[in-house]
Image (cartoon, rainbow, N blue to C red; front, side, top):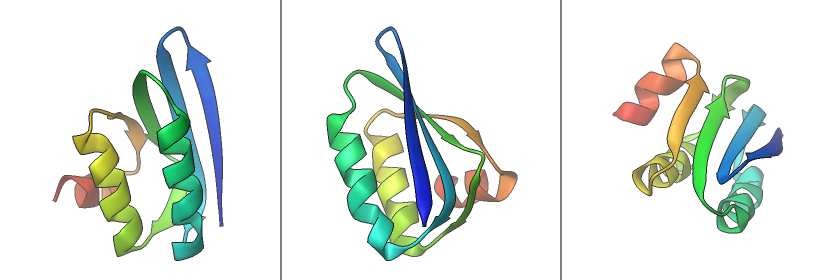
Length: 81
């Protein structure tokens, strides 16, 4: 289970995802992605676990223009591969 929080600063939105992402969390992440306008910074520092489908979803968000603000070294590595 994860916790998603958003913080808007002008036209920039910081999306923070904390916890252990499982398949049932993907729908909530997709909903947040669709609802966030403008530039996005992803803060994944508190994301402890993420399956393959979650990695693909986060990669797609980054490929669409989101920037990675913070993540563990392991998460940074798997998102770049």
